[in-house]
Length: 120
Image (cartoon, rainbow, N blue to C red; front, side, top):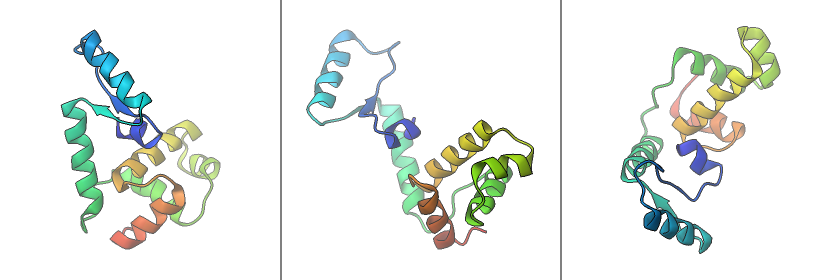
């Protein structure tokens, strides 16, 4: 869900547990520039925000580290996919997870944050 927020979503509410009045209020809030988050999502966002503000490196999987290292070397996604024997879509998924964990929006920001944290 944090990925959706990074891509511009103004909130998140699970439809299964949100009554129509709450949904309408969330739509009104978004229309007026506000945001509405389900408490569980707010906690997840807060935890990730805290992690990105910490001097400690986030826990990346081995594959995410491989992709990050390739990004740091300036390797394009298609080449990373070919080199790792994965699809470009899978590489994009890894990149999205890396961005979320590092609290960034672009590949350049991910590389910069990785260098700040001493990831290599």
